[in-house]
Amino acid sequence: MELGGIQDFLDKKTILVTGATGFLAKILVEKILRVQPNVNKLYLLVRATDAVSALQRFNTETVAKDLFKVLKEKYDTNLQKFLAEKVIPVAGDITCENLGVKDSSLREEMWRDVDVVVNAAASTNFHERYILCTLTVFL
Ligand SMILES: NC(=O)c1ccc[n+]([C@@H]2O[C@H](COP(=O)([O-])OP(=O)(O)OC[C@H]3O[C@@H](n4cnc5c(N)ncnc54)[C@H](OP(=O)(O)O)[C@@H]3O)[C@@H](O)[C@H]2O)c1
Image (cartoon, rainbow, N blue to C red; front, side):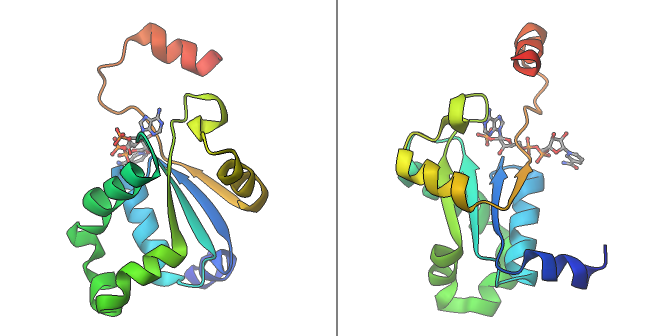
């Protein structure tokens, strides 16, 4: 797909990205916000105890990185306002029922509004027990 085609596709879309603190998802999130600021909303699933912790992880592990330098230069003091309009960090876990999203009204809103799901959540440390990985795949 041409870049123009992808930009047009993302226009006004609501996207759920899992693994949002990970290497791949960070790059994806930054690129979407940079090339298509008219994206409607990005729900970012982050392993955290609650929404405040999810937001904190997003800010420290993603926004604070050099990767966001171009967006920081573009939006300057308005970056947090832009991010608050577009990004909703959500506390969750893909191995749990309903992705571990405990807030039922947020869950309903997500289930209703999300157009695209990008699953970048994964265990990449190779320390998991094989039996647990196998169970996750089959459950
Ligand atoms: N990196 C690459 O170059 C590359 C290339 C091709 C394909 N891939 C694939 O893309 C996927 C992501 O790779 P990555 O490099 O971004 O990995 P990564 O940096 O290790 O990120 C993995 C992300 O998944 C999250 N996560 C793990 N278990 C989760 C769970 N149960 N619920 C919710 N979130 C969970 C982690 O959260 P925590 O921060 O809480 O641990 C982290 O944010 C993998 O499947 C990988 O094989 C990667």
